[in-house]
Image 1 (tube, rainbow, N blue to C red):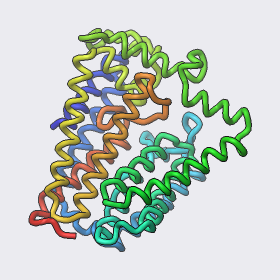
Image 2: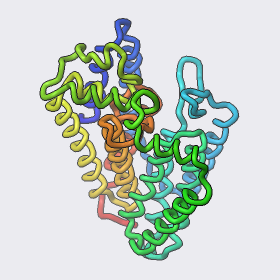
Image 3: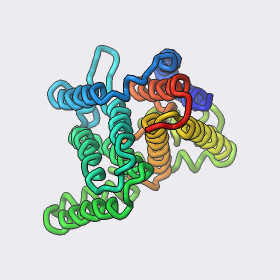
Length: 350
């Protein structure tokens, strides 16, 4: 129910922008299809996903599809991240995130007894790194950040030695630092700094972030009302239906509406964690926790960049932003989780 209310909140916000109701109509269709997929997935017995052979094949197919993007992908906003299929565009990085969660859940669930060994940090990191690199090179920096966040979060909850994790992260930080000092050219450093501090250039690369902060602030306590968001309705706020849906919602619904949105998001995440806590196997438990982390990272980064606190990375708000690719993936993942609750009852096993 929280996920559906979040989707409806985004839908109503989209309807206030366009006279032809283009986004509203298409998003209504995507929401309906996604909910149907959720109910369909929830009655399927997904326990076959525990099989190593199934997950290896799924992982290989995901890697091949991501590689095909570099030759067959559609370029939009400078990124080759989509397959154009008639009137529908598929972004493979969305299902790739769920595949990453499944692979890591399988890997860590099989090694929960010997998990303190440092090689498990490295091997799990290699799995995630393959997908991370293919997403990063599209280039889709936001998607790559999500992949890294999923790996880091699942490593933390898996029981891996924090000392070993710090060593690996320390090596990564040292490599980045040396690259900054010895490898990056001045113009490359300038681009990175502008990306990290977009509001320093509000007439250039920071324009979107600046308009977003205005939209959020202008909502004040109760908002301007549905259809009265001037920043969004007059199109000062770009990509209002996707990357900046949080700012558009905040402008029309205000602080009170934003708090309600965040409460609904928290209820959804707590529900996922509760299902994970009662899971019959470590695999299902880790899958649920990975899914919770996916949504948490998306929400934190999306809200942060909409308020000018984080760089703009093109990350959507789960269940709320416009688009069929991420909606179908999110509802399918919830369906798989609901199925695990249906078919995996009993005491926790490895």
